[in-house]
Length: 270
Image (cartoon, rainbow, N blue to C red):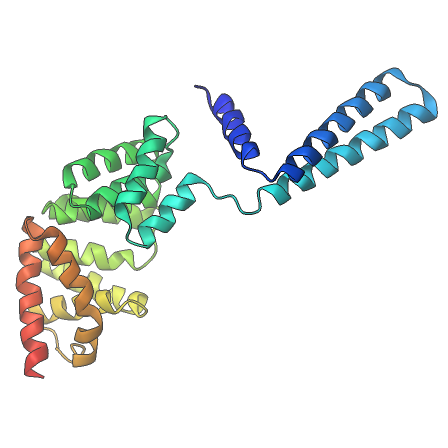
């Protein structure tokens, strides 16, 4: 099915969900517009002008009705985004897989689907779909970042570092330096990791879980532990405990198990 045909199908499906009054008004406006154009094409002088003005008025009315009728409509991608943010990952997967199976998934939908599979613990499927998204848009940070996260959690730290670097080169948010720094640390590139994590500190001030991991990893490299306050551990730890529950069976997850255990012990001592 071609893109134009798919778009007409989507519009028709949306039209079927409109209120009846909007459906009737839209059809009447279109018919009046078409009639006006036919008359304008055949008439002369004043009648032609009047018919043209009437046709344009009908077209504008149809546009207004169209926008009003679609005011509450959301795209499948938007619904999937909302489900993902609500951590309803099975719902997000169902919506996005439907798009994919009907050849309607662009690189953004594929990226979100790959991220969803990662959150469901299916790293192989996540990698395959994100790889597809990256091939579609190799210079867009969104699929690159998602691909990097899946590589990181799979324990492929050097590859993850390269992908995060590419994402930053192509406009990824500055906070992505945190992900790059963590990948470098896990890959035992400690000098680069230290510099990168320090540079990311100011960019993650609204994200306690990232602040906590930066402080913890820097502490492992001999930096001051002054940032590892009891308050920061309490705020940031729940996220990492969730990550452990999701990925405990992966190489990355095993490292997180140790990190979380040590942070819990430190918190209890305080």
